[in-house]
Image (cartoon, rainbow, N blue to C red):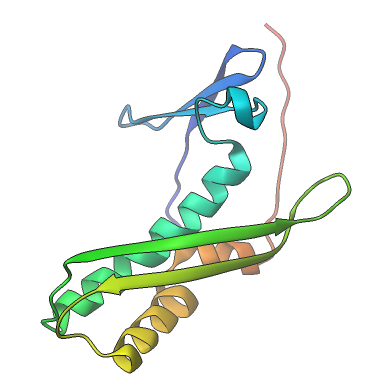
Length: 137
């Protein structure tokens, strides 16, 4: 069983910072869109899904010796109206700019990436056990 961990620390009322053991930092905020400086936790979830699915898709296309001139994925989430406002639907649009790739092969690669290899997608589909512990210093 491989463990991963991050520490999330409050910087201000609506600002947080997540740091992994290697020291990589992600800024997070919960400001309204007009004041936003960083992604929100729900934005980060969409970013995690999109980037996770992208890595394998690009690597598989390159393994097939296809030219990758550009690549991006547009990820959109529809949230529940109530609280908690969880995602009820997420769609991803994968775009590959390549002079020698075929639509069918790219579609197969994306399906494999999302359905088989992407740990984030698998996590979203699975039952996860959450635990909480509190401590006051």
